Image (cartoon, rainbow, N blue to C red; front, side, top):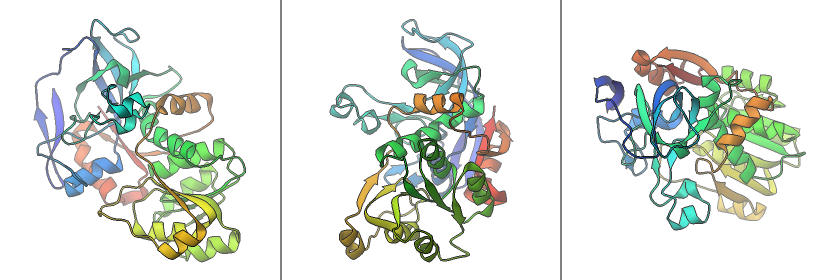
Amino acid sequence: MKSMMLTGIRQMKMFDVPDPAVTNDTDVLIKMKTLGVCGSDVHYYKLGKIGSQIVQFPFPVGHEGAGEVVAVGKAVKNLKPGQRIAIEPAMPCGECDQCIEGRHHTCRKLKFLGCPGQANGCLSEYIVMPESSCIPVSDKLSYDQAAISEPLAIGVYAVKQSIPMRGAKIGILGFGPIGMSVLLPALAQGAQAAYVTDRIDERLDIARKCGSLWTGNPDQLDIVATIREKEPLLLDVVFECCGKQEAIDQAIEILKPGGKLMIIGIPEFGRWSFSVDKLRHKEITITNVRRQLNCVEPALEMMESGQVDVSLMPTHRFSFADTQEAFELVAGYKDGVMKAMIDF
């Protein structure tokens, strides 16, 4: 089969590799159909690492996938060849203290698709996953929606971990796919007003179409002063979705006393900085969001029921052979890109 691999910083190459096979009783062989390019994939493409997770080249990334079941192991009970599935990229051990406590996303022995040292990604024509990572999707959902359930689940989880949304006034700093994945369930659950920022005007257009009350480009106006004017009592919760220090600084300024800061963005640097004075005087709570927990199925259900509409998220499409072009587009934030999809 064909597999697209990182071969160096901003370098990719298509390889011919052996076809994967069902070897364990719970294995599922999947023919890939669609993949979404994630910001974390692009971190590996641009930098060769995320924190302590360092790529050993060559290596295939990719974890936002959807496909069709080709074959199953003899212990697989709920899947059969020809079935359409969303892929849950996390493969927890099920035995460590974190798994026993129900925190599968922080499993001590977690294997995650496209994560160096854990598991090859799904930028290949076929992959093998355990049945627990294969989630059947309704015929009402497209392969795009199935793949987008992965980032959407992160947004659903982040909203769940924050505050009750009914009547809440929220900020979303950074409106890429994760920012959009936060906005949609937040509004669906009754957020009263959403203030959204991004440096790409086309993304702000999408935010307005999705229901944000106000949008602003931090390169064109004073975000803090503008939001403070519009909301003198400030915001209940702010979701940092871009991994930028200036966004953290803005979040502290626009949060009300007792407010909550949700950190979702992955920075390209190693340490955040906070104003101790403002953080302490406002008694702001900070919560880090590590991927998601038990939210893929709810994300799929929200799309199927029409509670959320992700149709504006895919903005660009590429063939499998043109994967590097997709990565370059996303890495350079070109052409107003929100989400680049790769079709196999």
